[in-house]
Image (cartoon, rainbow over all chains, first blue to last red; front, top):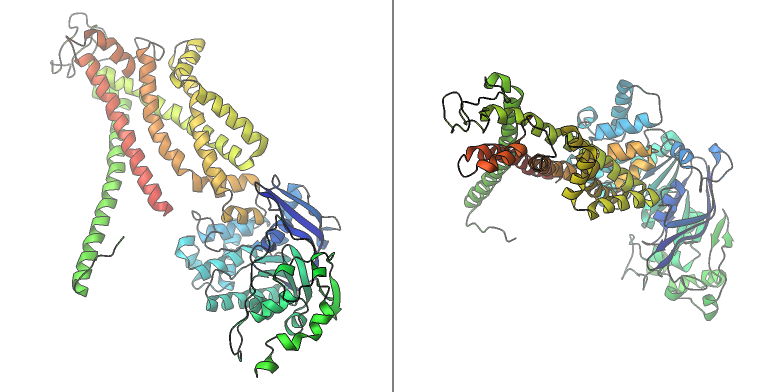
Amino acid sequence: MLTVRDLHSYLATGQGVVRAVDGLSFTVHEAEVLGIVGESGCGKTVTCRTIMGLMPARSVFTSGEVIYHPRGEHSLLGAPENEMRSVRGSQLAMIFQDPMTALNPVLSIGDQLIEAVRAHSEYGPAEARGRAVALLDRVGIPAAARRMRDYPFQFSGGMLQRALIAIALASSPRLLLADEPTTSLDVIIQDQNLSLLLELQQDTGMSMILVSHDLAVISEVCDRIMVMYAGQVVEEGAAADIITAPKHPYTHALLDALPHAGLRGQLRSISGSPPSLIDVPAGCRFAPRCRFVTPDCLTWETALIAAGEHEHAARCRRLDEIDEGRETWLPSDSASA
Amino acid sequence: MSATWAASPSELLMKVAAKAAGRQRSLLRRRLALIVGLAMLVMAIVASVFAPLLVSQSPTAIDVLHPLSPPLTAGHWLGTDQYGRDLLSRILYAGRIDLAIAFGATSVTLVGGTMIGLVAGYLGGKIDSFLMRLVDLFFAFPFLVLIIAIVAMLGPSTFNMFIAIWITSWVSYARIMRAQTVVAKKQQYVLAARALGYSRIRVMFRHILPNTASPVIIFSMVDAVGNIILAASLGFLGLGAQPPTPEWGAMISDGQNYILTSWWLAAFPGLAVVFVGVAFSLIGDGLADVLRARDR
C-alpha cells in the first residue's frame, strides 16, 4: 500500500539543523494497522506530516521515497502540489493530535463535514448532506442530523475526535494516518474512540498508521509495531512479538514503564530524556540512557539487525547478549509471581 | 481572582445572580453602542438620500437678498451662507458625497487590502516580501502629503479623491491581515484542511479569512471616519469636491472667513462631520465587542 524508503526530514531552525526523521524505512500493507510508538519528540508527527507533504517547504528538507502504490511507483516526496492535493483526503487522510483545535471554530460541524464529502466527489448539496449525516451517525454522534448545526465549541473533546474521524473518512481514504488520536482524551473515551477507529478500519478495509506514545494503546490495536527513538526505528516487528519478546533495551524499558495487573513494587521509569535532535550523539542514540551500554556502543555504526521471525529487527549490537540475560533484570511475570 | 465568599447557599445564589445580571446588562450596553451607531448612520444616510423631500431649497440656489441669515430664520432653519444658499439643504446634499466617500473609499480598500494581506501571509516567500516592502514604502511617506500629491497630479475632483484614497489606504489593511494570516495558517484546523486536499483558494477564503477578518472589519470603521475627515481636509484645501458642489470640508473652509460674525457657516457642517464620525466609532466599538464575544 505505502512504502517509505530511507526517509529523512531535517528542519532548519535558528538553533541548528533538527534531524527529526533520520533514515526511516517501512511498509504498510493492504488493510494492515501499523503502530508507531516513541516518546515525545522522536519524530512521529514529523513522519506523518512528511508523508502527507504538509511540512513547510521553506524550512524543511526531505530525502528518500514515499511510494503510494495505488498511484504508481513514483515517490510522493517533492511531487507537485496539484498531485499531492488529489491524493490528500481522497487517498491518504490524517487525524490530528488535538481535536479541540483541528476543526475550524467558525464553521458548523455539518458544513465542515459536507465540505469534506464534496471535496473529492461529484455529490450534489442534498446528497452530500445525507452522506454527512450518515457519517456522523456512523461515528456514534447521537441525534446526528440535529448536531450538524452545532459549532465545534458545542462538542466535547471525545465528540470532536469522532467528528474529525468522520471528516477524515468522508472521501473513503485507502490509508489513514492517525497522529496520537486519543492523547488528549480521558481513558474511557480513549478506549471507545480507539475501538471505533479499529471497527471502521475493519469495515472499510483501509490501512492505518496509528501513532502514539502509549505502547498499551498500540499493542491492543496494531498488526505491526515500529518503535522510534530519536528519529530512527529502534525495533520493528509483529505486535505480538514486540510485546512478548522485545529485543531492544528501549522497548524493554517502555514495557517496564507500563502498569499491568499482577505488578508489584514500583514501575521502572527510563532515566534521562531523548537526545536533542540537533546534536545527535554518535553511535547508538539510546546509549546515554541504556543500562547495557558498553564503550563500543558509542562508536557503533548503527543498523537494524534481524532478531527473529516475522521480520522482527532491532537496532542494538548486543541484541543476543541482552536477550539471554533478560530474566535477571526484567521484572517479568515469573519473577513477580 | 478570588471567589466571593458567602455564608449560605442562598446568599451565594443571590450574589451569583447579581453578578450574572450585571453581565447581561453590560452585554446589552455593548450592543447598545452598535445599535445607536447604526441608527445614527441610517439617519444620516436617509437624510442625505431623501434630501429633496426634506428641504425645498436647492443647495446651489443663490439668494443675493438674504446672505448670512442666522439660524432659525423663517425658511432657513440653519441660516444661509454668504451667497444666501440654504445651509440645511447644503449640509444634507453634501452628505451624499461625504458618505459615498466613507463607503466607496473604505469598502474598496478594505476588500483590496484584505486580499493582498491574505495572499502575502498565506503564500509567504518572495510574494510576501515584495508586497510587504511595497506596504513599507507607502507607510514611509506622510499619508496626507502622498494623497495631496496624487490628487494634485490627477487634478482636483471627487473621483480623483477616491482614486488617491484607493491607492494609499489599502496598506493598513494588508499589514493587519497579513499578521493575522501568518498566525492562523499555523493553526491545526488549517493544516487539517490542507490534509483533506482542499485547494489553496479554499483554505485561504473559507478557513482562514472568517477566522481572521474581525480586526480589519473593526479597523475599517475607524478608517471610514478617517476617510470622511480626509475628504473634508481635501475639500478644505480645495482638492476635493469643486464648487458649487456642497461638501462638508469645503463648507467649513468657506465658513472660516466668517467665523467671527456668522459662526453657523462652519459650525453646522462641522457638527455633521462629528455626527457621522461618532456613528462610525460607535459601530466600530460595538462590532469589536460583538466579534470578540463570538471569538471566545
